[in-house]
Amino acid sequence: MAVICTKLVYNDAMPTTKHVRRSVSLPAPIAKQVERMAKSQRLSDNRILVELIELGIEARKQKEKVFFDLAERFRAASDPQQAKRLGDELGRLVFGEEDAYERAQQQATGLLDQGFHIGGKPRARRDEWHER
Image (cartoon, rainbow, N blue to C red; front, side, top):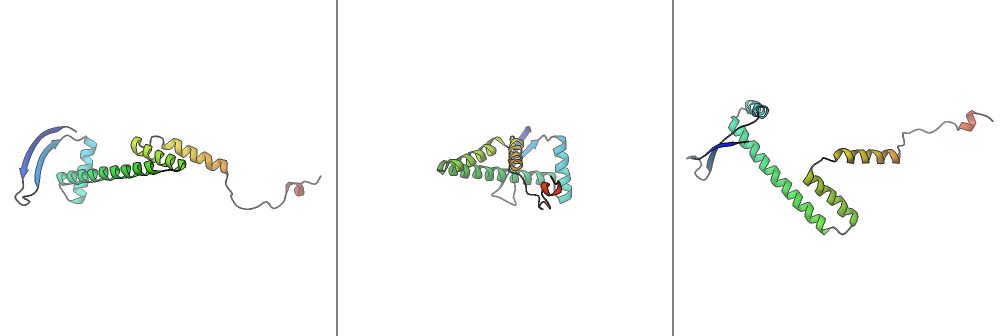
């Protein structure tokens, strides 16, 4: 996104709020999504952008809070297994879900090694079917 210009605008209705005008360039697919959202909610494109930015800022704050809470739990962990699990969670937060496929594959392999009981029981043993 490129910022083209910045200008302070004072709103008489809300004397405590300063508005800053910014012009940004949006990729065409995102611009179309913003237009569709604005139309469906009967709001201006500008209002939708402000709401999306506010939501993004709040989401980032929440992510930071989760990270710092998890880091504190990791530092306080005395059990090695718990520390490993918390370290893995920290890694996922920092580096994303790039290794999600590998984790899913390991989990599935573990389930297959463990085996499944699919119900039922044999009606007769092999020896009963084939007399010797």
